[in-house]
Length: 172
Image: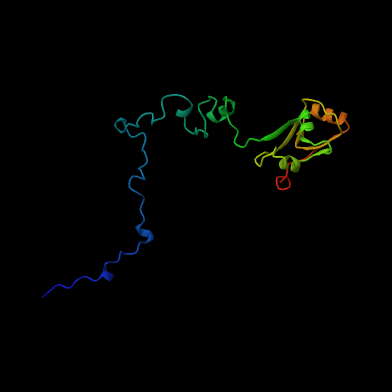
């Protein structure tokens, strides 16, 4: 009698159930049983060393503890060239720069004006006014910060400094 050919519907893979799940090969290890004799490699001192803080019972090291040495995470900010994660980037203008930026008929410096003139970029966080130079006319300056020297020079000329945050949606 000739053999019948297997139909394709009979060769479907069996369904996988939760009872079939196993960890990947090499993903799990047996717990090291310490104090079971010299031959195990973890006898006598049980891999804790001889005397000292770590050898005693009940001692648990905190994360990052380096035996009393200054831990690496506390050293980092002191290393030269350490970069801040979120640095503030300011447009710094001196008092003498205000005369160059503003036209003779203008008497108010705003974030929108700086944006329109192409001085303030999108990634900048605000404007800081520094005290180099002199102010010769009455100005109203909107800035995120002004040094005491810059503040006194602008006020001596009859102007004023308005301290406010740079709202990037309003500035352009």
